Length: 382
Image 1 (cartoon, rainbow, N blue to C red):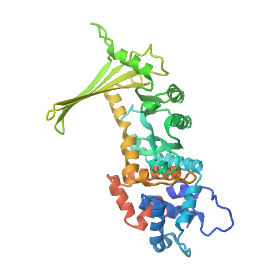
Image 2: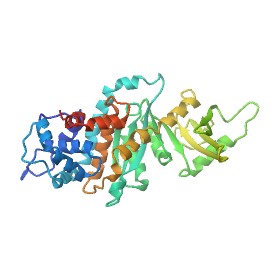
Image 3: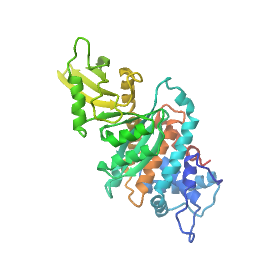
Image 4: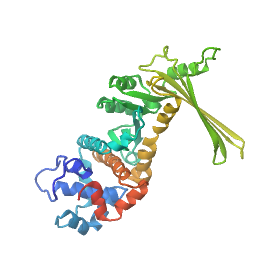
C-alpha cells in the first residue's frame, strides 16, 4: 500500500504514530487502520462485528490492498488498535481533513446568499453504549451547516463538562464571518464573550439555566407599546394546516437590550408555536426565547428565524445519522479512548456520505457498503 497523506479518512489514521512496541509486530500499522475503517463502514455495531467482516472478506481486502498477510487481524488485535488510538492526535488530523473538505466544497459556501453568515452549530451528544459498561462520554461538536462537515469535536464527561468543552472548541477557531448557534446549555457569559472576541456572532437559546436573563427578556416583550413606540422591532409569522392540525409559528424581535447585562447582546427573540387539533380539540402553546449579537441592520426577523431553524442541522444531519444510520449507541467500547475515537470517525464518515453524490444518506451508505472496492474507495484506501 502506498503511503497516504491526511486528505483522506484513511490517510488521517495512517499518519498517526504507531503506538505499538517494535517487538512482535505482525501487521503493518497502515493495514490495521485501513481494515478497521473499512469494517467500521460496513458494520455499524461494535468491534466484534468489524472483526467478523474483516475475516469474512480477507481475500478481497488483500487483493485490493495488495498485501499478503497469513491471516487477517483478529478481534483482540483490532480491539487493541481501537483502545490505543491517540484521540487528541486523531482529533487534530480530522480537523485538518475537515478544513481541506470545506476548501474543496467552497462552491457550496458560494451558494449562500450575499450578506449571510456561515452557520456553525455547537452541541453535544452522549455515547450511550459506552456508558452502559464504563464512564459516560459526551462528544461536543462544532458543525458547519453549509458543508455538512465537523469543524472540530472533543470528548468529555456528562453534565456540566459540555460547557467548558464547547468553550475549548471556540477558543481554537477564528470566527470572522461565522454565526455560532447553540442550545440553552451554551448560554454562558464566557462563551458569548469568547465568540465576540474572535470576531464571530452568536444566536443562543435562553431557558431556565439563566433565570435572570430569561426574566429580563420576558419583561422586554411584556412591556406594553405606546402610540409612538413598541418593544417589538420586527415580526415573522407563518400559519396553516399540517397533518390535519392548525399550526401558527411566530418570531418577534426586539432591540431594547441596552439595559440587559449580557456581553455583546444586540437583539432578543421570542419564538411562539401554537397548535390546535380539531379532532381532539387539544391546544398547545410553546414559547421560547433567544439572544443574539447580530445588530438589527444585519438580521431581520425572517433571517433570524432561518438561522435559528438551521441550528437543527446538527441534530438532523449528524446526531440523528450517528444514532440511526451508524447505530453509535450499540457500540459498547470502553477501553482506552476507543469510544471517543470511534465517535470521531463516525462523525467524519457522515461528511463522506453527505458529499458522495446521493440525496439520501442511507442510499449513500448502502452504495458504499455494496462492495469491498466501494468501501475502500470511500475512505480513500484505493
